Length: 467
Ligand code: PHE
Image (cartoon, rainbow, N blue to C red; front, side, top):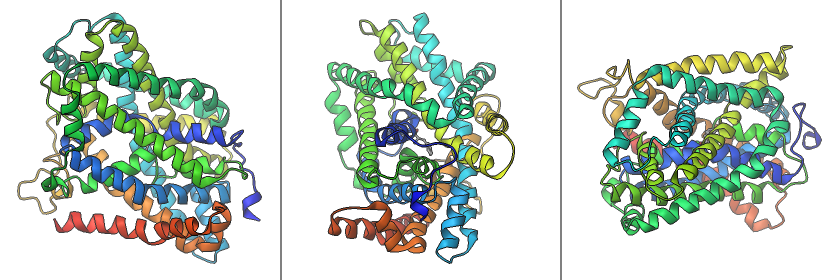
């Protein structure tokens, strides 16, 4: 039976290691860097509400679907879909969706690595004491100076990519566990300390208000971005969770595990927002500042508290680790596929793919400096006005890649996986793989997978198009 197979890439030692790895994948720059700045750009509470709804109603069912597809087939996404489709007497062409997912993952990794590089840069800057006693304006200038220097960005981008490729080349199962066991809990503790700091700013309630006060006029604005980000944040829609599911022991319960991972991820996002916004408001910064938000805000906090220098270094080390464990999960599906399909060794496959991502990543690097003025899809009179899709004005190259991956490809990938599990594999296969003891809970879960998630995704697309 399909469920008793073992992956050729190895298996997690236990359910806990899966939780650790999947949390490592989910919790990353998405929670700490992207969630706060998107909340800022899309108007606070309205975005947060949409994000939470999307996590619960769309993200969770998709995450379940991906995990169970992976565990049932024990293979990389493309081979998993092909084999399970054939088993269920459906077309092998389902595997094309997995290819799209893998390419999306590589595109995401291209910019992810650049931003991961920023956090490496900040480790050194904080360690040197660059931010001691710094003011808001200087912090802003510091970030602007950093991104305006392409060589500096390339250096850290290269280092970040090498660090990720190194673990992948050795095999994920062996490489991840040891580091994550210590780093993940520590990241949590430091976020709590930062939260403690933001409580002392006198603007904590302003932050809470911004994050949870609902401005209904902005609900629709942030809908597609929130859905895309929910998938991004949970690492679903590209096959990352699928491949981690493939390494999951048969005895573990999927549903409980997946819910735990999603809760942890959401919790970290909210925590990051609650830690950041009070600092933003107390320093008079602009909440809708965009991708630089975290990199301008946190140095202010660390530069102005006792032990800030040390805490800052530790914090950015942890951000880098969180980013690194997500980067690994972005590369793994494609690496696993090529290892299954070709005779090339894991080392060479990893090296080649990492190089491609690195190269594409140069586009993101240059978006912040030499190609800064190059804007795509500027809204004036264009035939296809992307800004209607939730993009704010013209997009630079980084914006285009982010937009295309998060708002189009991730939702489409998510749709395919959830439809595949609930319609192609069908109720019995899903029941067998989820092995939930409570029959009504299973009924609700399956209903979410079969109807709510697919329709929800389509409705969000439709709402965006008709806006
Ligand atoms: N979930 C990761 C984060 O939030 C990013 C990611 C997206 C990882 C898609 C894998 C797949 O940082």
